[in-house]
Image (cartoon, rainbow, N blue to C red; front, side, top):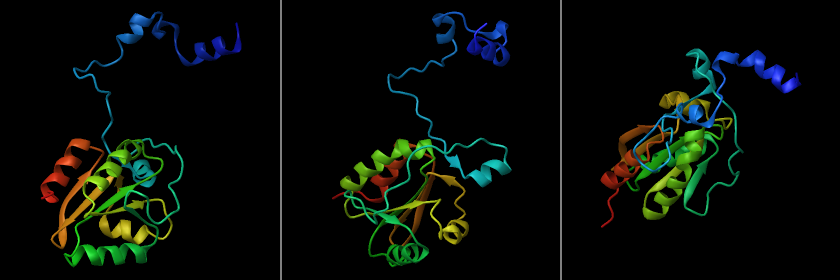
Length: 183
């Protein structure tokens, strides 16, 4: 017996091995739409996941180190930057979204292009991207009780108007439309 076959026999009992493609397809959940199934549930921070016995994975590349992107998304890298941006959002002069994210979070990577598109559709809304793993932001995250990503805080008229936890694209777009209508 080859080493792979031996390994497989130790991991998967013979009675539960899948013998054909049709039996494999029967294990895949069916859904009515032609669009792919996307997990929109938020990712728990590793420390929170460990407390609740949930798995977490570190994958992906770190975020860019630049302070802003070409789309107008501002990247917060320090507590002072966050506090300055929050002053602007709470003085009511500019609407803002705080987008808490992490490089290891799959739903965060899924929703990132949507955020880019929305930043172009709503250029008068300041979008602040906060990587929860950046050193020096622990106090901010603790004070705001951010324990999962993606999390969005929507500011309108000088106060926090809404919060969205998870990568629900429909809810994100609807919230943007309600709070920041164009025209």
